[in-house]
Amino acid sequence: MPAVKSNRPVNLSMGQVLAVNLRSPVAIASILHRISGVIVFLLVPVLLWLLDKSLSSPEGFAQVQEIFSGFFVRFIVWVFVAGLIYHFFTGLKHLLADIGVGEGLQSGRTAATISLALSVIGIIAAFVWIMF
Image (tube, rainbow, N blue to C red; front, side, top):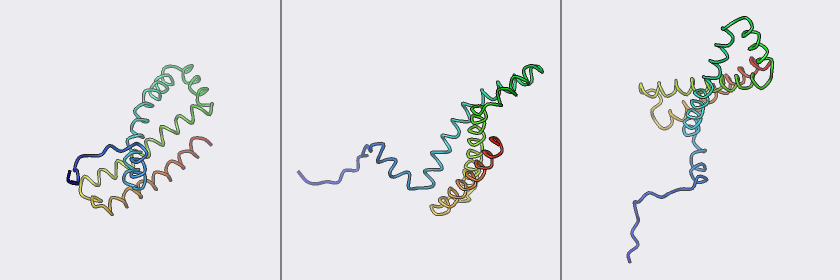
């Protein structure tokens, strides 16, 4: 039987996939962009409910103020804002790539690194603003 190189795809384990993808800032930015989109999608109804409650009556507004005095709700709001900030910056990166800016391998890595750095700065600023 001859030793012929097969061109068939190879199934990689999750550990192998992560080992390959976690070395690339482009892959990290892409994975986190999807995660942030899911987080924002799941938290929008909760925050819309809180907005509706606060606008329903003066008593509802007082209840929402009381709810926001707790750490857990402020943390959830921060998670939402962090997801929005990250999704915004990586979305801008994707929009720029769609018009031809940062399409190449090296420029894509640079754009991903810049979007990650700007997101970290924005998320830290949001944490200080919301928690303190």
